[in-house]
Amino acid sequence: MKRVVTGMVLICAVCVSLSAVTTVLPTISGFTALGVYNGHRYYKSELGYSWHQAKALCEQHGGHLATISNAAEDAYLHQFTETYADANGWNYYWIGFTDELQEGVWRWVTGEPVTYVNWQPGEPNNTNGMEHYATNRWSFNASWNDLADVLTGPWQGYYCHALLEIDSAYDVPLDISINGLGADLNLTWSQCPGAQGYNVYYNTDPYANDWSSNFHYTEDNSWQLNGLEGSNWFFKITAVYP
Image (cartoon, rainbow, N blue to C red):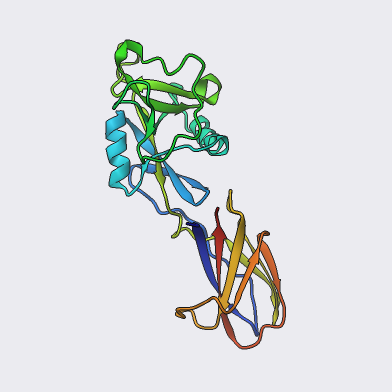
């Protein structure tokens, strides 16, 4: 199933001025919004937790601990684990990867297939038979490490932040700008990482059930329109993902 990110804006074809829809990620208490990647929203918890606490907290907010399916997604998340390192340098972030059900058999909390891993050399090593939960960390070559649910020994009192992933960006609008006058317009909008293209729908009725009669697909994040007739036009732009 294809996922979409949607933005909508009203255009008066007779007299057009610059207009925009501002992209603002919905706020979640206790989390900092990171961004949208491949149609998914990502957040970082402001406090540290045990892995099970972090897992429950993410599910409480309608998502899950982040799952990572390829190197590009991993790199996208690593930029934030570096940026949001704690003052003491403890920039470890729980992800939804665990072998707590069977030692050595790592599974994503969503049940999706494991298509990519990025373990630090020598990891996972299950120190003291307690390390069953993966962290995404900027330290040590931006790789993964296994840790215990609650850290002990020299790391006692340290807690990892949660990387929250929400599998929908439907309510995150695109930044849309319009330039032109009268019936000739140029639409541009913000690029969405990982999108294969964009659908541009246009209609004079914003409440219409069917927008498919006026439709344009483009792989670029812009479109030149010519010859619009009528007064008010509504445009809906969706980013399409594989």
